[in-house]
Length: 350
Length: 150
Ligand SMILES: [Zn+2]
Image 1 (spheres, rainbow over the protein chains, first blue to last red):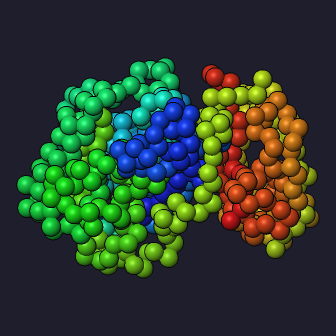
Image 2 (cartoon, protein in one colour; image 1 turned 60 degrees about the vertical axis):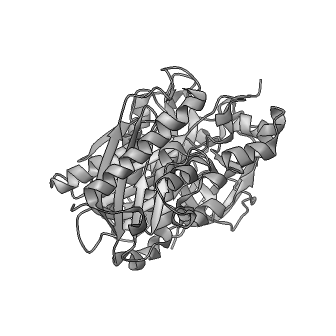
Image 3 (cartoon, rainbow over the protein chains, first blue to last red; image 1 turned 45 degrees about the horizontal axis):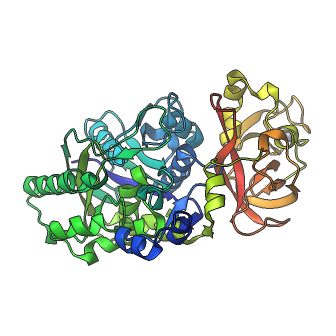
């Protein structure tokens, strides 16, 4: 395929809440939750942040990393399950904030946690067909878990933006192949107007996450001829710290292959951002010639699997790169449950 | 190089978005200069402006103005901590508003985010994209640049 990654950027809010601070409120045992979910803390958006502001910050970093004129971007897709407006696209807010001009294709996407990688596939098609020179796909969310629900420990905020292009000398990683596995599966949903998502509890794991990721990844193996050991790194969607380790084991990947792209234990599940931030963190450390497998998952349900190979350009392009771990660690600020409620507008001055 | 700032328009920051702001046409005209520091500069004497001016204050009509988008990197020139906010920012107090001396432009006003360290005069800042104000449950969301300590 012609299309490849020419730049990427990530944004994660500075606020964190620890599992202990949530568990205390609900009289639950923090240690067993930390062990059960494989997570120690999650990111929380500031009061003035939402999926659009996170998308913009990630997108601006991606444009700087790519070193391109934002006007040359021909398409912008924003995947999220927490778009600030029900009607009024996030993608147009991003395009204006990038000064990307008006000759532009744009749309918002929604597919639970995989809308960002679905956008990548759309951009690949537009580039390979010659319709655009550069395109951007963003996954960004400020997801919420119902107070007292298990999701409250993991639902966090963050986003990743990828710019694809077709100029050989600009591409830092080739996308060799992508394939998706899709089925109608009622594992997780949110009706219009509902404040929080609902989920099928234990049902979500096997028929949802595991089935789709395993099938998509095996299809990718069959269609490329690659096997697990051909990849230096693997990134799987990470709704918690345990599922990606489990699915990696099922597919025969080692902990060493997935550790660079596994961020959920320290930032939570950033939903549409999760696979993209995992890929970004992996590209941060990858060397020319190395191969990366990425398989996302979105409830509802589907998985997008990608085989990616890093090119020689990656090293020289790092001069304008803000690395994921630097963003994760900078200005990190811990808040307690009451400030967390205030940041989510659950409590207000009267 | 920087020169004298435009007179600050403190109103939107200290009183909140005024009634005038609550119209989508008014917002639409200002979007570019709210999302980015889109100003302009005099072609003759290079004096940078933000917000944009139709003519240069020094050269008048004998020069032409060209659009400039400033990087947003700069230094806090003056700063005020708002403890008694207007109604619209009621739940945000205390927060900071200030004037930032841009590296590549004039002095501009804006909200300054507190990110762990208290911003002071001389603090290095960079531009950020944030929500400024949300008009109730059904109105528009107003996005705006803010500054954040580096
Ligand atoms: Zn002049």
